[in-house]
Length: 266
Image (cartoon, rainbow, N blue to C red):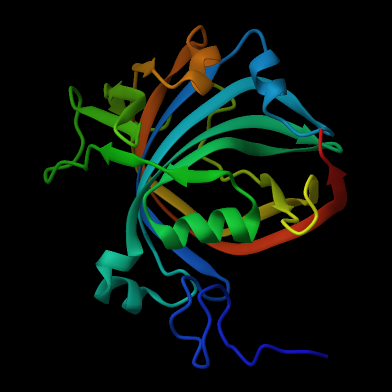
């Protein structure tokens, strides 16, 4: 068997392995979250962003922004000593979908400005992570209370993507059925183009399961969303079900490969 002689779980690799962008699993995440839920009566927008074999389970679309600390396969002590490497914002658009009878979420769009998170999510698991700037309201020093606003602004290379705001009314999770804060399984479609064989792509369908999921300090209320990016145009007519804020903790333990194939151009 040929080997490179280089160490490390991800690029960049060298003879020590210590400078890789991210290391082996698990990755521990903790931070604060703002979420707004939408419901699409016409589910064509969801179908348009799903690979073959997937279908909408409902018209539910979730807009979530996190301000997180992540270990990237190291430990929390490393994360606390290296806030410049471990802290970042992330914004996602997630759809509730079904694949071969299994229900989970699929993220057609994700944004972050942290290169380790971008590489770990996109190269490792297949999430379509792109560079973006995210601003998010931090929890007040005295804690959330009725009348507080939690806002998120997402932009990409000086152009607006979307903005959302939750006007908090009361403690607790959103009362609507089906919106309880349970960490779903996450499907992803990792696509690796063969640059030496134009038009050919290796495709891996994966599902990621999160461990040790914990949440708390819920507040919820009505929400507003303003979409600007053209790829999100189809969400403008969605019904806004409301929003919530909370803290979270979970461990990303990798993914299961549930299908793989080679796809030709077109």
